[in-house]
Image (tube, rainbow, N blue to C red; front, side):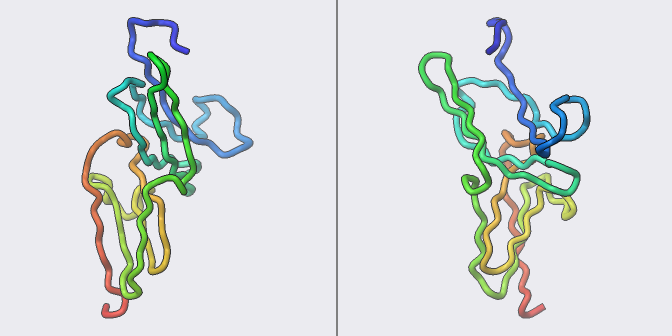
Length: 142
């Protein structure tokens, strides 16, 4: 718990592969930007964190205010995140948030027919607000 009441209560989120050391500076994981735990930040936020350079983890972070100054912060698996579902047999869906469109970025999501993919914001921008860009590709008539 925070001991200095004059400063904002801020935390960071991180993910690392099981079995790695817990030293924050060993470069084994990605950390989110720090955020203030306050009533104005209550909600559910899908976040993408890189576990390794090629393996991403999508988690849903829920922040709730309990009694008084107490907060609950819960990280749930990708099944609790927003899901992008493709039900059209002729289309493939490419999705990314505005400002994160690079196709090789871990924040680019491809959804073939009859699948669903959890989507989330970059750990560096997860509390930002921007549009989700969807590109529909016609695979049958291309």
